[in-house]
Image 1 (tube, one colour):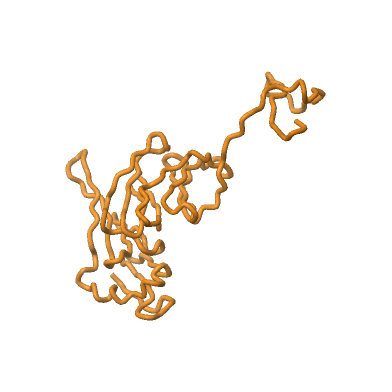
Image 2: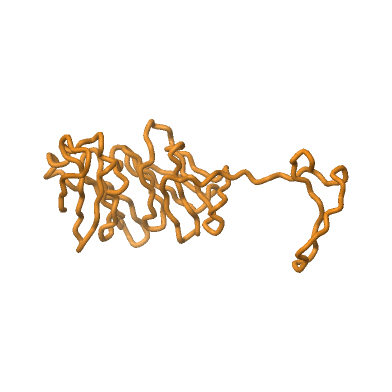
Amino acid sequence: DSLGDLRYLATIEDNSTTTYTDNTEDANLGSIGEEDADVTLDFAFGFFKKKSSTLWGVKTAEPNTVYLCDALYPEKCSADSYITLPDTNDAIQAIIEYFDDTYVFMKRKIYKITGETVTTAAVSVVSQTAGCVARNTLKHARQDMIFLSYNGLYTLNRVLMSSNENTIDVSPLSEKVGKTFSEINWSNVDRSCSEVFNEQYFISFPKDTATQNNFTFLY
């Protein structure tokens, strides 16, 4: 209307009408319509989950919140379609899908999210002590996820307890070469990156006072 509000005009009863002549005065329009509240998709990173056809993303301005969007309409993401993790003065560094569940890596913690929507989601803690400090070091190697933490390389893997039961284990991978990773320039650790080739894990990081990656380690 003249005030900029969206009001109901008419109902079209068929699927063939392509034009409609609007000759209704503003005063005779119906009630004010409600617009769906959407958020801007300015995600810093995220991933597409095939099982539920959803886009999971994280905003820089909301470092402990995960948004879920319908991948068929990625230009819209409902403002109430999000999961906020406990505020521990930490920030999400990476988010992945692993055996159909979603794993959220903070710098010092790891969370698992089961479910495909906000209403069915359940959050549980996988690790209280180890997290990922550099997103580009998180790689899938065989059945494991390998990543760089403050205490060196760690692995996250699924352990089968029985035919219908399993658990997730997070354990150190580089204890024997711990000194190597203690020499990382932690002020620039976010520049670290890795790759898996021929079932070997290559990681590069800034060592000592370097501000760019200057050391590569092969595991």
